[in-house]
Image (cartoon, rainbow, N blue to C red; front, top):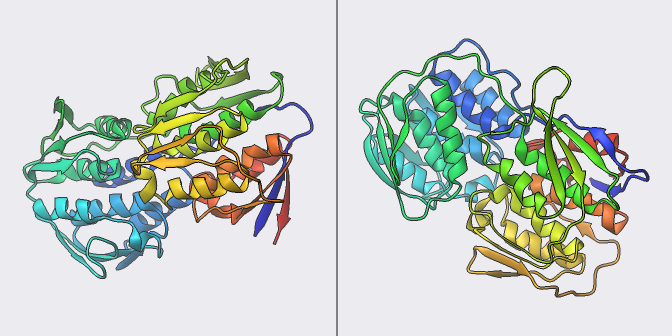
Amino acid sequence: MQYTIKPPTEPIDASINLPSSKSISNRSLIINVLSKSKITPNNLSDCDDTNVIIKALKDMPKVIDVGAAGTAMRFMTAFLSVTAGEHIITGSERMKHRPIGVLVSALRSLGASITYEGEEGFPPLCIQGQRLKGGHLDIAGNVSSQYISALLMVGPIFEEGLELRLIGNIVSRPYIDLTLHIMHEYGVRVEWTDVDTITVPAQDYQADNYYIENDWTASNYWYEILALHKGTEAKLTLPGLRDGSRQGDSSVRYIFSLLGIKTAFVNNGDGDQSAVKLSKHACMLKRLEYDFINQPDLAQTFIALCPLLNMPFHFTGLASLKIKETDRIMAMKTEMRKLGYVLHDKNDAELYWDGERCEAENDPVIETYEDHRMAMAFAPLALKLGKITINDPLVVTKSYPHFWEDLKSVGFRIENRD
């Protein structure tokens, strides 16, 4: 399936109800079960990744297939390690090539019984759940923050709790802090007890009627739309986004302020100061440099956007992009070349564009590589290009199932080419 996206013919002035936070939903689901709560968290995300965890926790089948949901693979691996019973956890072909050895080794060192069903260091895994002793653990700080979050969430269940020391550079720290915040909301004591150490005493989670806020990561595609919109007439309201949010990607508002997009928190009509209103102003910036080490999921948007604004960029902190749903660095270089922009990478963690151009393809088709963020980062480019065609557009269901419907609601025209 292909979608060809064409831009609105009138200035955008709309309110968009974003999906609820996938990151918070997935964490709260695991913690909610560990707390033995009978109440499902409110405003759960309806994305594929969250639905995989919901189904797994509800049915607990012998074989749990998480598909392409990397978060589910990591969180469920830790959860199953402390849950009675034997399970096999597997996923898509891509998932079977996404490393999980660091997490498995960490859990084994704490007493977990995990064996590889195929290639060493990769899913599928056979897990025999049991009571774990826990204790002190050293782990590299530059691994996926989801490994660290997975360990932290089961930490209170260990007989001796967990003292987790992060060695070296700590990446995606806001996601770790988000995990700690949700654990606090469920009544456990967990703290940074040193600059590199998190301590979780053995204790019980307390059941809570938990409400999940909307997703700041999803908002970044609407910021991108405003940045590409001609003139300054466009306005967008995004309900359910909180000032002071613990979501790491809430920093999107600061990055886009450099590009002339202003964020104002407003009353959404029911007395709750939890909506943002976006407006466009002149952008004075000539070049963008940014370290995405704490917000890797925002990187593709800015990689796609800046060349269309004729703005050279140099982005660092991108190492984790190579082990996401696809090798996102290579994917972005390949697809941007189709549009006539030559990007260069460096040290597997940096990407830059210095203005170099090449001949663009006639009627290019953007590949998504089974990666939801490829589709959503490229779709707004229709505003500058006049139209853009995207393969396998339904990959957006992984995190933002109603993305295309929301685009249509503000005037984008979408043609389905089966």
